[in-house]
Image 1 (spheres, rainbow, N blue to C red):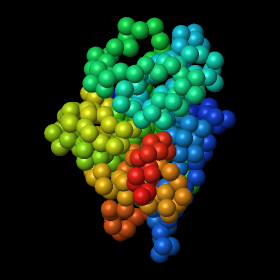
Image 2 (image 1 turned 135 degrees about the vertical axis):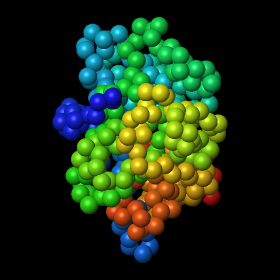
Image 3 (image 1 turned 90 degrees about the vertical axis):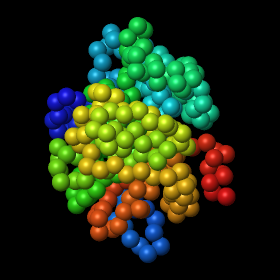
Length: 314
């Protein structure tokens, strides 16, 4: 993404994935006073219940056929792995996913149900694999979950849909882990409407981008959060310039705010979301209506552990 993606590239990605990717709706966050100024971009409705299918499908579809036939591989806390397994089955090629051994059981089982091979790895070892580019010594076609340009272009189709469906949007809230989602969505939004505020949202307990912006360089932080989908304790050298370019602000959200937002969406909108997906909604709720204006929160996925959900609802 050293060069800004042209809007035509996002449009081609949307066309390529039109038979696979759902154009998800914008639905107002339930409010008893009838306000409709926070809209939810419901990526929970995708075939794998999360947004990752957009980027993963586009990245795999963009590979030469002989490279794709070698088999696919990625690293994931669960959502990218589900998307890769689904996509591998779609193209008839094997998909291997390195997953932290403390990932939610429901995500691990979903990957297997989609036909993917799960390789459980201690979390610290997994991040070392990423930093040392361990995939370069392996035979698979590796789909990097953050820095792959075609993956980010696929994710950026979310931005196209937001502007098309809500032309007056002023602020878009996006959760951040490794940065692949906001890198793509932010690039698309800025290409269409440079005045839209792109707000990155992280857990207080894993503020890698916030700390990177504070220091003016990629940083590593302690990371212990229920938001497993964004539990990445560092920002890579490759991603930092792009995120610095497209992100207008970084907001931190507490674990209690995440739980309260999961509960609010479940009881108000009758929708199940995971911790990472609740982050942008919590951030939008914390901002004044005058400051955020018409706003969209990208609700990224719905794979939450059943016991955790029941505890939150009780």
